[in-house]
Figure 1 (cartoon, rainbow, N blue to C red):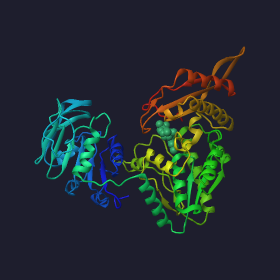
Figure 2: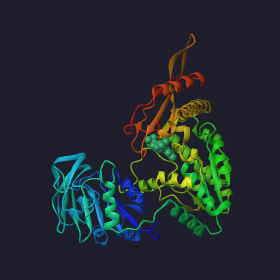
Figure 3: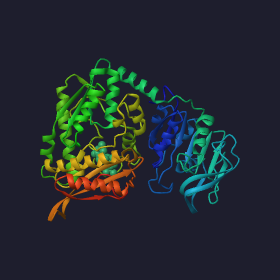
Figure 4: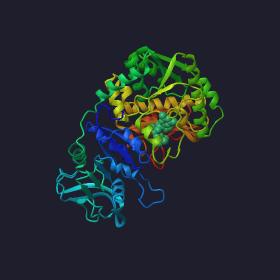
Length: 516
Ligand code: XMP
């Protein structure tokens, strides 16, 4: 959104796990924030017209081989700069200071003693304050023009400032909630040092996007794939607001959806939101593509290809469409432009990617500036039912990644029933909203059991429920034992062919959410 309508603060990413959080914290204060990788050219940076820069932390040491680096011209833009952790060390080194590996690393909660902080980012922080640190390197010699504004027991330069150039550095993480006065620090930087104007709100965003879509599309037509998930539903509702029936949502029913889901998707999009919708019933094609396949990556590839084929055919039928709308979110965008390059492919996500070959459609991504919870907020503004807004994520390849071994009609039926029981019980117990994602998995083994007087040899269902902020790391949900017991009893009694239910207590990493 390049800061034309409101002030933009640019976050330069050195690879910190908190980079997105920094951008979030800024937006929460009503200022628009955008992220660029540290490898961005200075022209890209200038194009954003930032009123201030924040340089993120990063996992590396400045002295590592291939340590992330950025253009020194960042420090010649004549805008205030706040460096956090690695970002601060990078500034210090660029400006002639010295960064060394310290005798003691600092991880976790550390008290910082605030010094001569008038007019700096620490101006509104008490004399002693708890911060969140994670570093071993530290500044050994200050670069010229800087003064120390905070120190910890083992880190003599925990914060520094150069009032003339409006450069500030923090060895700790103000964006993390564990830092007691993080919000005050970010406020001081934004409003006192950078004098940024507040102007970012979801209402402003909605109006701006609708205006842009109308301007771009003119009297043209747009198609877009929908899955029933919150991103594509919000994208559809927005396009519908902007251009009405000239937006056509294409719902590919891949036959890998959960119980009743296809009907629900249609009811919500068409029935409740009035979106122009076409459903392509492609379950048989997907099942045929998956016949005999057990390798997880192979399954994903086949599902991806089939999806593109089916969607492509439909797009060709919708001759007048000149644009393709996608519900790509900020995290997807960031991941693909990260300085680490497209981060190591752990799993092939088929729904993040470019246009199918041979399709000459222009891409519209109205949500590419947003984080997940911002999309939810926009969804509420666009009158999406709460059921959709709060829906757990569901992977594009659907139940195929939850059926280990071959995907068949029969096994899909077993998993659908088990999954429906799990989700129903979670909702009934009030736990659905308290977990990030819950699912059932059908395992490729049979185990021995006993029913009545007879020995059984039947399927195992694994239940998984996780709590997570960003799905990069996750903990298993501490579901009550009686709830788990109820779910197990119902599944074993009501789903034919299942005689055992287990609960997955692994965290991510090293496990993942899906079992595949
Ligand atoms: P993992 O299993 O990688 O999953 O820990 C993290 C999150 O991503 C979802 N997921 C996908 N979502 N397309 C999607 O839209 C996919 O191919 C895909 N694979 C995994 C998963 O459900 C979890 O929320």
